[in-house]
Image (tube, rainbow, N blue to C red; front, side, top):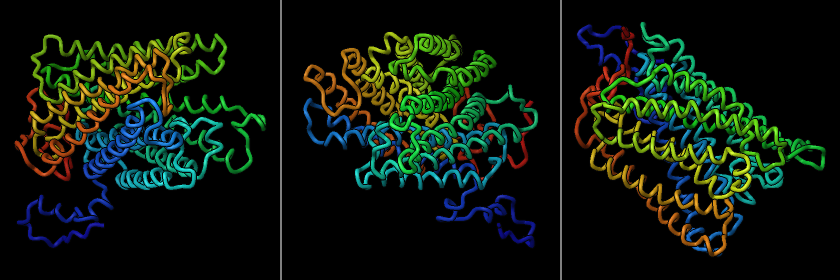
Length: 534
């Protein structure tokens, strides 16, 4: 409850009145109900997770720098690969996009805040608890989970208590996602400014609306799968144990029924950000807005019928292989529509290449490449040959790092002036972009060759013929990691502390949208009287 006195001198201005609403110090953050504060906390949490997951990745790449077992025990290596996956997916990418949603959706649709402010606070504060559980699993007897981030039975039925900690952590992360999604859906559907129809919404709001429905649909599926693993481990059931009449392959079906929509959950908001940035720096409206909306919805619907392309090598009947192969190829069509529309938006636009635009154009190049390698993996006979090799690792890092992460960097540089009131340093932003782009490709491009030559993933050692490419990849990985530390120290921190060029309300001349009508930095309360959209 705020304790604003009603006996104020009427000379006190409106702005001063609001100063009482906002708690200060640690209370501002612990009891935060303001969408901007919660968005900031999400973004900080996800960046810390990114660095933690990055350290694990560097551990993996250190071991693989040379053939032979060098620094890590194979069991610990497996723990690192598993935890790196879990932390990056559930701790870095997903919370970061929710941070973007919290910050930007109310500003974009002219709402005063998110629909459920206290639930918003709760859905954030679950995350640190889950993170402590997840990272704490390293200290449990037997160490952290080491059966791969997919947690396939039967391995996960045999592990120590670290596995139970991970299962509980994932339950919490899932609950947080569901609450965040409900909040986003209700905010978008009920709190848009007068005159803003659904088809007038910014693309970022659209992609997040569709993503939120996906999240609500598939998070319970993951919860179900890992709960069955839990009961198999402790309560004598045998869902996934062949000894008691269960089937380990059933786990894979349930997991990937969650897992494939999940990868679209991690890319659709990225598409939304790119669809905001490209029109702004092309000085044009987005080409084919309605087809972008329909394409996003098509991707979300089709994402439910492609899951078993992760399982071509499990002895699937040829009919099943054919169905999932063609369905996967079909989902490439709406994605191609999006790529086409972005290129068409840039076509004959008066483009300038500030940092957000660089990241966006970079995104289109590398993401498209990741998409093509995905199509190759979708062809069942090829997939059976490269299944579980580094080719798969190369593919999904091209779509998740060069896709999700690069889009988030584009979003950061684009909205940073609105968040902090200061422009991110342009020169340093370009150093960050070119450094990341070069080192990213240096890390993951050689993995295509390693995979095609037959190097399996998740192994701590490899034959000598793979040594050269692994060395290149490890050097690239170190460089890529250092670029993100550079980004934190020399781009984010100066902007956060208020160094650099002060931003105007609308610093990008081609940017349209309600978020650019409020001051920079965005005040604590915005749009208390909703704007009218014509």
